[in-house]
Image 1 (cartoon, rainbow, N blue to C red):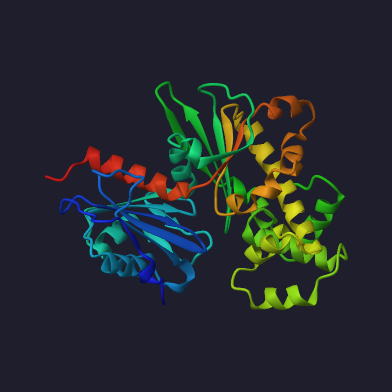
Image 2 (cartoon, rainbow, N blue to C red; image 1 turned 120 degrees about the vertical axis):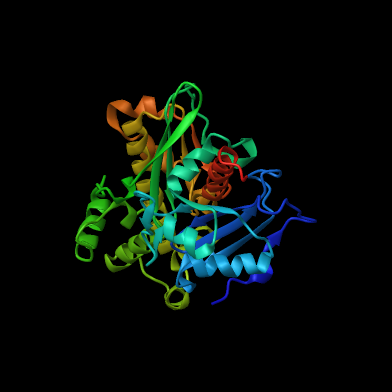
Length: 352
């Protein structure tokens, strides 16, 4: 198992008081980011950071031990954003065979405490702190102060969350909305649903609006005769470690592969429609934020009008949704949110 610890990014001349360091992590089905933070430097200046291939490790504890050995730092507490529901301090990672428990991880890692939070809750917590360089506007809209905000994050899975203003600031609430049932909006999507029902007992939005979802869409268009598959691309996909990234890249190159382009366009329309559904359900007049690993990589496809057309295609609510600001989050917000939460908890329970 290799994480390429040679790629650990350490801050120049990083120093910290012994016993005052936080380990934060963004645990995803494909990749996990780990970083060490000092209260003196804050959540935007990690002392060391590294990204790991999640599936190459038998457990989070094994990954953490390797990372900390490589950094040379000794941490006191940990805060992990988890791609899955967190209930009573435990979580089964949705797209990994990892069962995480705060008490067990605290014991295994020899720390004072470990805190688990849903990754979309972490992203939501980070959203309130984001600055202009962290955001790419898709629709400037007309934000209404102190109203709800929404987050939708396609990556290995599909996460959704919302933020409510409590009078003093925003509080983030996670959901498992990505596992709600996919509702097709046109004949092509009806065909997609029928195609996937032959494979899955329940076709969730995540099955069509995530990295694996993009691959599902590609297979549907290929198998349904919507376009021929090039022999070159078929060979590349068969050998690719991350086929969705290959499809997205082939769709966005100057001479796009037609089938990949069609798959990405359908993906963007479905993402826009689901984002519009979420915005209506929580009335996110304060803004909707596209986070996760996919949106920053497909910016051109999100800006060509297809996303906003699907986002606002809600009948009598079209004009309301047209005023909702939409932003792509350009940084790894779940890691930032995990660090924010962890440092806040450390400040509230200082070491004796």
